[in-house]
Amino acid sequence: MSFLSTLFGKKEETTGNITVLNKTEYATQIVANNIKPFDVRTPSEYNSGHIKKAINVDFFNAGNFNTYFEKIDKEKPVYVYCRSGARSQKAARKLLKMGFAQVYDLKGGYDSWN
Image (tube, rainbow, N blue to C red):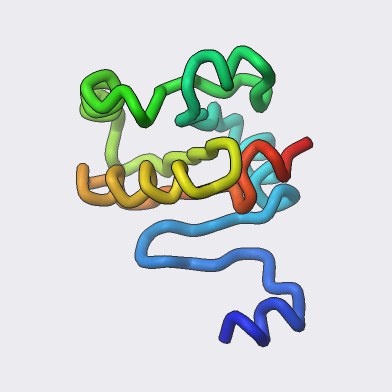
């Protein structure tokens, strides 16, 4: 199916309850729904550039990551991104295990945003 998706330009891929969106779809959803995405990179990466209104919650700081997301409504969709997409996939899987119903990830991460 991924070959056909590539061939016909499918915009989103779903892995379990994680939906991976390309830059256009991600941008459209966060703007249309007034969503503040979660940047799961380190503070220094975040400070070197980030998506407007993004909230920095460092995935590598497990204690803070868990504490922060335990306070969030698990029924609301969560949008995450990192530098290239690998770390945010790990963060997204962790969020699913924490009980979040809908997690959206930016395909290619912040590198694809620029």
